[in-house]
Image (cartoon, rainbow over all chains, first blue to last red; front, side, top):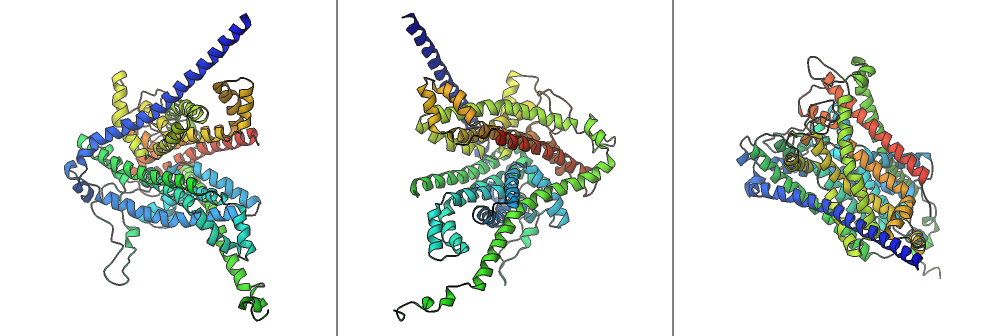
Amino acid sequence: MNNIEEIRRIIGQHKRWDLIFVIAGIFALMIAVLTFMALFAHMLIDGMPRLSWEFFTSFPSRRPESAGILSAWVGTTLVMLVTALSAVPLGIGSGIYLEEYAPKNLVTEIIEINVTNLAGVPSIIYGLLALGLFVYQLGFGQSILAAGLALALLILPVVIVATREAIRSIPVAIREGAYALGATKWQTVFDHLLPYSSAGILTGVIIGLARAIGETAPIITIGALTFIAFLPPSPVKSEFPFVSFEWLTAPFTVMPIQMFNWVSRPEEAFQLNAAAAGLVLVVMTLAMNGLAIYLRYRMRKNIKW
Amino acid sequence: MAAESPDHLADPGKLGYSIRRHLHERFIEVLLFLSAVLSVAIMLAILAMLLKESAVFFQHVSLWDFLTDTQWTPLFDDAHYGILPLVAGTIVSSLIALLVALPLGTIIAIYLSEFAPFTVREISKPFLELLGGIPTVVYGYFALLFVTPMLQIFFPELPGFSLLSAGLVMGIMIIPYVSSMTEDAMRAVPMNLREGSYAMGATRLQTAIRVVMPAAFSGIAAAYILGISRAVGETMVVAIAAGMQPNLTWNPMEPAATITAYIVQVSLGDLPHGSIGYQTIFAAGLTLLILTLIFNIIGHLLRKRYREIY
């Protein structure tokens, strides 16, 4: 009898530890949740009164009440355009190569290890590369082109990994079916594998771009100006050939830099502007990440191979 | 029969080897190969750029001075080039961040993977992912204007810039990376290991800590290493909330600069291309890259050594 009492006691003790751990787990999760709440609430209280139509359509100014983020969001849009146009084809291309074409040899292994290593390189190092290579050696200057390419290098590993995972999840039977009908390798990839993996790739691209939008350090490093009271030249012209690429070499500022600039000012009024800019930035990244999560969720539900 | 067959069957040449198709395929393969090799080229370019500018820097400053001088004042008249203050700032802020992120991240991962009901997990995972997507400059703002004033209630002598508040916020920021990778690793452990453990009468916690975690060790190690390199390379939070004054201190209550914050500080000014100040940021960047590469290599070795294959 005594023995059973003893066992009951031990079981009870172990169950108590289980319970304590569940409480610890919920507590840890709550710390993350509450931090996010505090961050969002603090920015909302400080920034909301500043959010108005004028805030989006005004240039930065010495007077905090009339300062806005026009040049910042235009700059962010143009930089993201360069980033997406360069990182997406290159990332998808190398993803396809590594997953479908690459022979098992030393070169492939080096590329694979290298992609993993690139993902671990701090973002500011990409900024230094862009400063030395794009700004000075290639002579792009402190321009939208240099910033867009720097961010493209930064998100390249994200796009590569997403592409590989999306293509890997397609069953071999699809490839065998295509080959059996006489398709070449590229026809198989382009007509079958790419369309079927497009949702997965898109998810990766969105997550990558959301990261690039908020990335500040590499852009500071290439020396983006913080006080820009003009817009880059318009990419669309009224006369032939209707498009112009002058904007690529224009000086610029982006949202996170504008916010950083306002945060580092001592006047409190500028910090309210920083809160408002931060609010816009957070809503943008949350929306993009939310879209990616939703896409992945729908993909999991709909696709059953 | 022959009359009914489609054109391309009537002409067997179209089914056979076509030089044009072959070239087309080869051309695409080469293009794809080039885009894959680009990632290697980027890595080499990073190394070449950092080494090239640092080489010029080390012609002015001896490596011994760089590693042992206790002052970092490259922009002053009385210039000192000792990297120690920056390394100390990086280590202190990263340690604080990791003291927050590794325990909390691990507890969250164990809870979500082994304890949490389905709905809690389905809601928490995307939420944590969203948390990881918030721009670092926003976390910097939060550290400076919310966390520091909060901490000053408890520690009235805390200055406006401190490694403590930057490190704490950085830790919160890194939790999602650690928890999601750790959880993935733990969920990849096959169910029959858990079932075996339960069958022996182990509780959930015992199973999680003594069976699942050792089996997932290589993945957990990878998550920790990623967390460490995030903390070491993090820039904006420390640049905003820890101040940018190089200061050789191990006291988290003081303001100090990290390697990354110094690079930001120099980049904000207008240093001429090719000056010694310009080269210092590349030397600092090289130090940072070497630090993170060391952690990556350790992670790689740990993964290789302890990989469990099912």
